[in-house]
Amino acid sequence: MFLVTIVIMGLSTFLIGFLPGYATIGIAAPVIFIAMRLLQGLALGGEYGVAATYVAEHAPANKRGAWTVWIQTTATLGLFISLIVILAVRTITGEEQFGAWAWRIPFLVSILLLAVSV
Image (cartoon, rainbow, N blue to C red; front, side, top):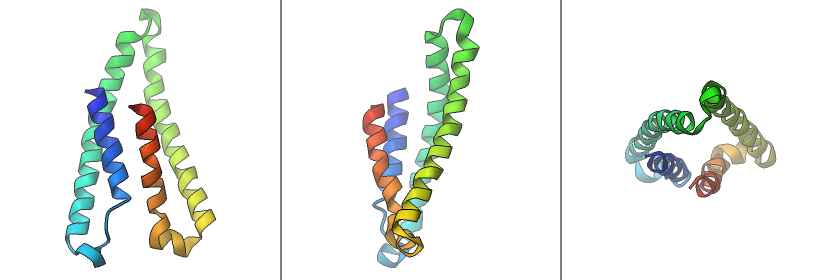
């Protein structure tokens, strides 16, 4: 189940980078976007529970709490790293280019994280 949730999260995030805009496909664009975000939410709910169970089962009995706390810590660390990536892309491409197309770069690069995770 952990692998399934990772793949759902990774693919839905990656596919957002390819999503055409409203001008191209109309109302389908926000509908597809919401569907991808729903898949991400579903995957996140599954990932967290499965990760906690997996880590707790494989941790030494006297270190379960110390090991499982890293799940929440790394989630927060991931948020900060994503903000740094977005700031870097915005700085490198500029506000105009970021708004036009470069916002897609972090979503597309996420496929590398999926490949490493799988």
